[in-house]
Length: 263
Image 1: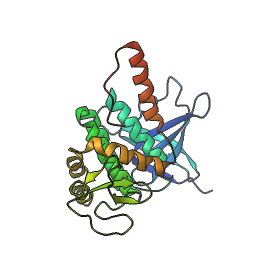
Image 2 (image 1 turned 45 degrees about the horizontal axis):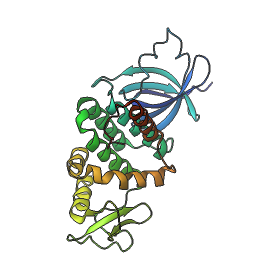
Image 3 (image 1 turned 120 degrees about the horizontal axis):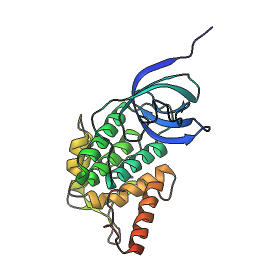
Image 4 (image 1 turned 180 degrees about the vertical axis):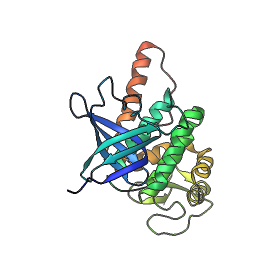
């Protein structure tokens, strides 16, 4: 009799969870070597389950599963340590990153570098919540780049000509960078696009991309959101809508938080 294939001690994060039965869940999990996969966690909703305090979002895990079908069976999970879960606005920002991975990654498509970038992003959201705007912008860029959906930021999208350092450009979902017109919104000088591309090309790009985003994080928010909507096939991400709903409720109660520039 053949035995089910077993994968042991794989670094992972829980992205999403669905009810499977009265006592079990199906987990969408991002793993370092296997990409996004689905796992059934049997009995996890029982009070005595060892998985209950472990299978939380934005927590670095080490998991073991068996099977090769579309939905595998979770056999073990433990916290890898390193940081606690983000809180407050940083928690919402982390949930947004989870939603991006759910939308833009196909199942069983490994992205080990992207997994490392996600690990860095989650850790920074937990430890430096004041930097969440640049953390989110950096991860958006790296996600688009690693999934092949970010155009070259050092050349025009249609002509492939190098950027003119003295002019501004806009980023279009269908066409890449284009020379900015007078009525365009959110243009950026060529120097900023070139700095972003140079940072993306670094061997360890997360911190360089954060540094390149620092001055222009608010200006990048809409162009990157449009690009993510285009490739994610949505008009608005659920996490973004949740944030807008919370802010609308706070305004009605007279204690609205300042508008978020993270998601």
